[in-house]
Image 1 (cartoon, rainbow, N blue to C red):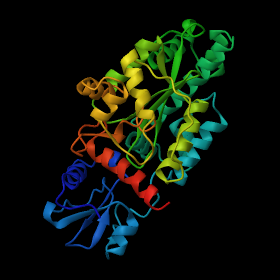
Image 2: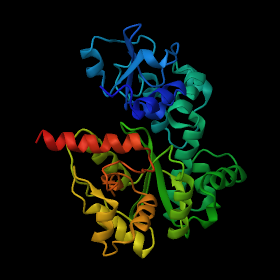
Image 3: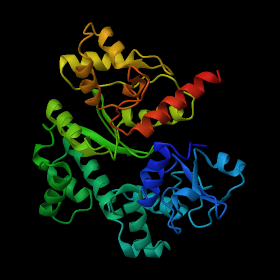
Length: 353
């Protein structure tokens, strides 16, 4: 159980008040007066702060005698895709060159409005926008391989070339005719126990892994895009598929090291600082001063902290393992509660070995 009087618990309560689904899987809130426990985004009546306590898992809440809320169903696996959503995804997968209409969804006993709400809540886009991203991503790949723009447009279900050009440019930021020369970075959204993350990679390696609610995210993405002279395009890449698998293993305490190819973007000093982060063993910490000494710049503690803050690849480049000299957690771009979670996760895994 989390300490109910800690700042972490206060953060969790604020997250519950705002129905912040990014905390999904991070904590479960139990209500002393009703004896039930809920997900962070539960729509039930809000209890008073003094009447709640927080648990890291459903098992812990059940062990303390709480029962699951019937409204938010906290016992359902996190990130589980409902059968009716999976059915819609299969329809799209079976006809990738066509736009699945609302009438087609209704014929399959799928409510378009309900599907739209699910996509907005879980992916911050509508189902139609999701389809558009898939078709544009497919079209981009076809043009890169040499297919002409006109055939590509019609092969992907567009009835007019102007409509295709407009959609393509809206999604990618450049026209189809520039596709062969334009360098792109594939961007996707991954689910983790600490909330969703944006991950981006090209053939050169992973260049971004950040929590979607990080304040500096847009600046990070702009910096990466400028440094690599590329644009972000929604889509999958083998590196991103491998990353999701390894992150799942890490959070399940089945992996202590990552072997993902990285493409770090920064100044010489930043690159050296990030390299020193990667040398900190799993389950251990270093102070900012110790990191500065490692770099041969013992007086550059502030500069080291700034460089760590510019790190665009969370977890794999483990800036969460650097703490203050007095043992305080100090800063972390993803939020101190996430830093605490990651350190506790690694330490718990070390202790049981």
